[in-house]
Length: 310
Image 1 (cartoon, one colour):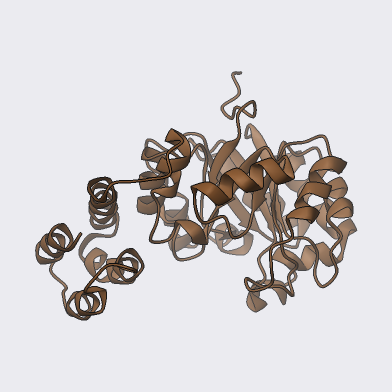
Image 2 (cartoon, helix red, strand yellow):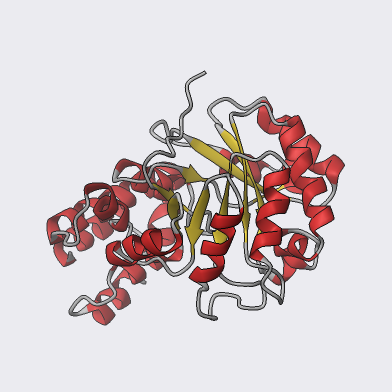
């Protein structure tokens, strides 16, 4: 079986972001340069208990290849059942275990970054994914620890489960999204393990991505919040360019808008408002533009507004 992910070149990966990395957004970043896309975090519970909304979140666009689904869970039997459901769905190339989400409702449930406080438990859950998955790749997304940074221990625990790669966000759970990202810790994890390591955290543009790759010696970068309102960062990295024209930006924004309307139907225009708030940052007349957008429900009118404004 030919391997779908080529680690010989630094990978550009879209991070899973709840509420943002839905099918339309993933299809756009894939088209413009991402090597790998990952679904929004899927709860094992919701998957096993047949949530329709969850099923829709797993759907992928035809160009998403390779495509990985990320699950969260803390009970081996539920995680096993979730993996077996995913095994039966075509077009999924890998399963990623979320061991990094800092959100209280995920943490308090014993999932996400909670697993970093109990590496035995992390190994048990991740080992379950590895054991039952029939997909080509198993991976984990981690942080540096709960309160204390233990990157080497976490890296070794993940590696011991036989995963294909690990993505590491350079903050602890306590650091949320505000503490400075510790690229030294990512570098230390990379040094300690023999599996590929993808660096994540505050990678917002082409220059920063290059710096992080060079400094940490990581096998790729994962971009999440840095791509919201600026998905062309994937295009820049893919083509090795720092500058991007206004025309290319407009093309990407319209492509995203059309994909959202396609996938979400009549609610699409309203859903796209928050995205236009991000897209219009830094543009002259942005505040006025947002005011108008907030009152538009009609997709044709909104599309015209986008074409004219950008």
